[in-house]
Image (cartoon, rainbow, N blue to C red; front, side):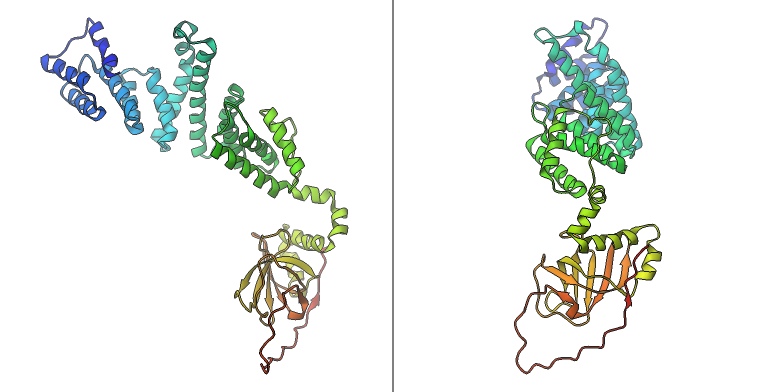
Length: 423
């Protein structure tokens, strides 16, 4: 490969060796077989003959050897050197383009170099892949595939640079262009979904999920590798369930549509749990009045005027609620327990008992309680209630206390004001 890269020196009639020593050094490079030895000899050549007539061939030789070594940093540096001699060298532009991301060149200088190389690479595609330059034996489809792969690499790098700058809208445009070129690319679907999700626009979360559904389930030549595909599919399922609920039919319907179409249809929407709840509020209220009442209180507390509402709610005895046990403090004979009410495992309500409970209970145990509101935080939402032991149900029966054990008299319950309902 190296001998071929340097063989053109004989065809350049106007080029001359500075002396016999330079020629001998060149010959030693062509005879060397170890890449590290070739690099060492090239460095000697460059140091002794910086203005050699063959510095272009030398720069190309560096590129070939670092490529053979699969040395990204060396390849990047060699490409930069070659571009100082030939600013339109397609191969060097390509390597700068693809190595910008892989070498994490996110500093100002590296990012600028990546953007410049990517844009110049795109500008040269028409010339580089002119039909008249198509190699013998290559089909038109193969020639176009190579061209598209080069352009996709440039678009991906341009999007990556914008992502490092947190300009996700700009990154999105490059990914959209890439998907229009190669609709079967699961990678670009995944990257587009990420760029949209990072914009944190609640009105576009369904659109982001569409692209994750597609990326995690697309098959064929453009599919992700099995590990990435499985992870992306699992991520979509997790996000969908959190956002829209556990409806396999609805989720599978979206997957089927996303596999069939690259982009979601105009006005595509996935109804959130909250939206579904509003639509079915009366039905929900009738089926689970306890949870409905809890969520009404939570909704009022996290609202803009929630602090004012809390002022009326504090020290009031709340209605009876149910929740799933999340944690105990301490684990045995706890004085405090934390329960999840709205979900199965999201800790929201801390119950402070007037006296320790006996023994312990498993996580997930259903607890029914009536307590007095004492503390509240809005983000993340939590409440702390004081609960009389007799107003807590669901605690599993424990072994009886030893005979003769003295019982501590219960303290007189504090006066409570009635719960305040928000009007």
